[in-house]
Image (cartoon, rainbow, N blue to C red; front, side):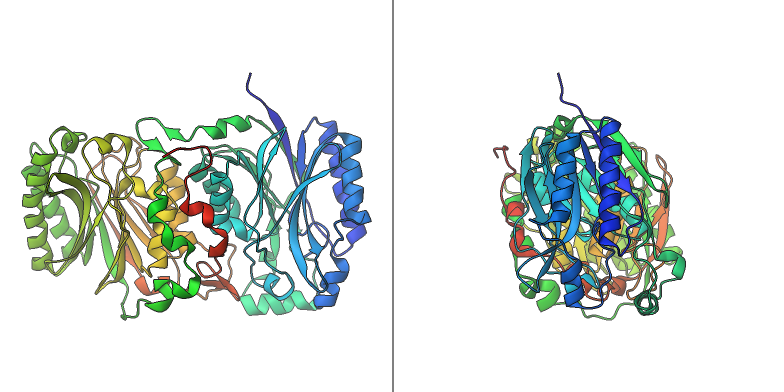
Length: 579
């Protein structure tokens, strides 16, 4: 019989009074236990709202892990026989303070702790980041990983925990960004196929003081946006919330879950989200930040915003008929100002055709390339399409990039879906190419399910990612594309086959130029969608230069705040999986 557990996650205001905040935790431990919860969790900075006069003040209000404040929570866990997760600023060697999660069992014992790895904004002035790799705790409730807020805005922390075998990720937050609950929390569940529970405070991030006025002025934030939304949630491994708190409410949110469901990483007919990773290709992810191409060789060519078009073309009676119709649509796009055109994954071929006869598909792809080259030179356009490429006895699923008719570069798909492995050889290189539209990164199809792929394209300094694809799971278009754009702060043009198993259309995800006033989202992406299942042209203006400044808030860079020396699991096979 599958193991089930009940989780309670809390949301409520946190004040500057350490004793008052302790009583708030103790009363909710009792309430959660009375409702039959096995585990109750609390927000980030649960001991003291996250503003301090100076480092000495931060140290004074931080908790001693062996002191009475933590001891009272341990005693409550023991008395009520419930597991407790909370986050508090915690004293290290004076004056160092860490932002630390605690996992306490039903006997009141501290099973483990996890310090925040990636800091945001003013946290950098008072808090020390962790230099310890992520740890998973094997418990009677399942295998648990802990992280906090900004750790979940970057993809690496949750990915590391999942690769180490976590079934349940617990995310403590002190955030006023609505995109956390809407996007960054559920996508970590889906891309890793794990359960994720979050606890975010509601009410003011910190009670009003003169310091708050200074922060509002620095960030361009309106007073009403200084409010944490709550929206604490428990998300299943498909990325679907099974329970979610209200906006700015005080409540405990409950859900009963089966942690062991997280152990199955297979997508029927597609592949395995962990076994199909390519850690042999991911070495760039652990390079020190000062050695990354985005730092050593940044994209500097001035680029004005340009009009992009994602082409959805249905299958004709032949490959030639399909490509003729595709170029008709491409000319229509160019007539309407598009200078960048992206075609769907293997668009001239019926599903399964390349696998049935890869030699024929490769020969037909040669002819298709001539049509696309001709269009590119006639219209002075940048064109991307994925086709079948032959080299000797090997066949590849390859994305081709043309500019003004010249072949700028190719990318051989690194992550192959299960059916494609019968005919295609996987590539072993991730590449980006300098063009008149900026530096362009390429990925194809299944690549988009792996957060490592667009992350590496961002580290290469890509301004845009062009993405011929087919949707096979709901969360690809709903969560993956907007998140890949947001977490890497770059625009993505995804052109999708209209016969995709998942009925969604093409997507263009764009990002704004930083700095910008805070309007309730931390690192947003904005989506333009095509209709599903039909011929269509999706137009959108993209701004390649918007991708070059990734500073979301002062001292907070979407890419360069990474902690690559902690990311060793990303370049190793997942725990328990033999490749």
